[in-house]
Length: 129
Image 1: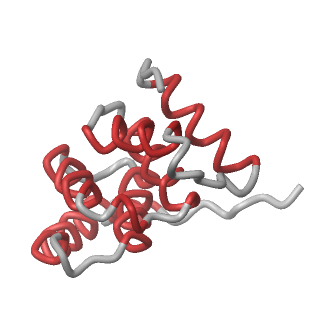
Image 2: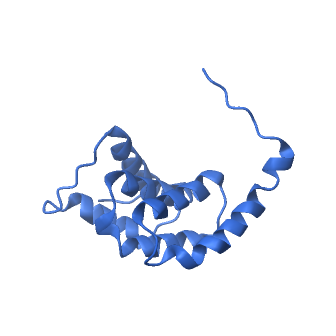
């Protein structure tokens, strides 16, 4: 089993400040200029770090709504994971459920990880597809 080395306290203490600066810099670009991959990864990074404002995550969800048809299964699963991790519902989740259950969409979830992440997210948020 490979163990990750813990970062020094002086580095860890700067994480919230660093993410706050990044959040401020990224916010203006969340609109039409950000592709689905980057939207899902920015959200994932902030959720994984346990930082970011609620408003920031909601803006990510808003930006994703207009591009949902462009999201890959991996990006959809990341986006669902983000909102479950921060314990927040957003309309993009209901639209994702619609997309996944629409027989005309025929979304291939491409792997167990995507299926389990989306299922876990909906369970955590007590959502029904």
